[in-house]
Length: 249
Image 1 (cartoon, helix red, strand yellow):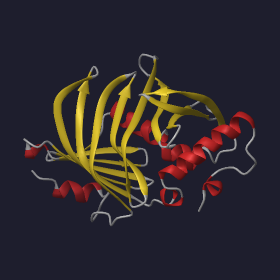
Image 2 (image 1 turned 120 degrees about the vertical axis):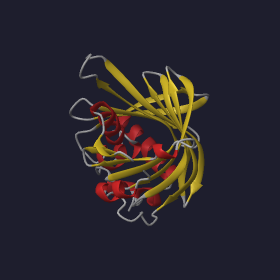
Image 3 (image 1 turned 90 degrees about the horizontal axis):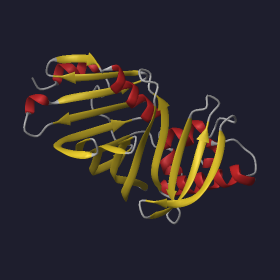
């Protein structure tokens, strides 16, 4: 499988051609065919929480399994074993499982997770680029966190957009951002993920630091300790009831 098999055919031309070429170089930097063929991933590390852009001092250990359609995150606050909990994202459903049982996540938390999934680097390449109605816009080069970056925007028919910044030398993603309208206050909000500290794992370039921002303020940082791809999934990996029966009480 090659990038050309994932995207509309046709020779690159003009601004759209530059955008497509930049995204093609990004996929090759991430691992090319191996990155495109990922069936699942496993990551473990630490999450640090922020409030109003400042660290709160709260950290959580996490273990994450992800497929193209589902995601499971096991979490543990190191000092409070009874706070063990699991988050499951499948389809348009988001579940949280604790020692008190299972429950649907709050609507705003689930909405944020679904937006992040639908505007991810993987979705930009695997879905948005394949749609012939998606506009690809090359926004040129600029400095991003002391890196010279190429900027590309993908705009779909619904006027929804993903903006990707890539290191101009390594072509690896530096950030991915998207904007949305708050359903309550009707303000336009912008969410961003920034990627740093890449390591090649199983032939795939993997960021070991992921920073999430909301309207320019840091809200979370993830520090990866270990990553692997195409690994056996845990038993009943995404079975909500089976997981609820095993959570430490």
